Image (cartoon, rainbow, N blue to C red; front, side, top):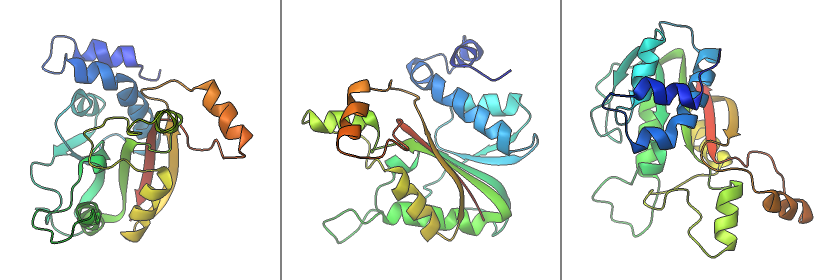
Length: 217
């Protein structure tokens, strides 16, 4: 039976992850676990980049080997080339700034580009990358923009990306994109926005709030 958001909350109860962050992200954790179990056999060794969350413990419970990153991923990673089975960048790329010391007065995505280059270098042939990140082209983002608000799901993020942008950057890094999808992990679908998109002939494809991208080396 597929994991549900309530299952995630029950698993976290009484642990260090029994907090507001887990409550906010429980639906995404459940959706991500479902995606992982479809693509990765138990025992796969995963580098889970980002702060520890209840999802790390869920992966271990389900039989996956997990390591976490404790360094600035915009720099060279402490792994030999071709040594990693799988890398998870879950809710990470929207936080990546350009490295300090940039002489340009603009955001050049140098941090993202460096991190993805290291993913490519460190993955084994056939190794997998999973990215989850807020979708700036979602129904909710469009609605906020039309109301004159910041369109990002979480305003302090450095940059939120449309699914096509994430796909482009991963492709630029030399990885093969296997699947791109979106799921509603935080916001419901606004029927008024669907009607508006229909009225202007805009695509309703990939409009949910969270992008899921799988790629391989």
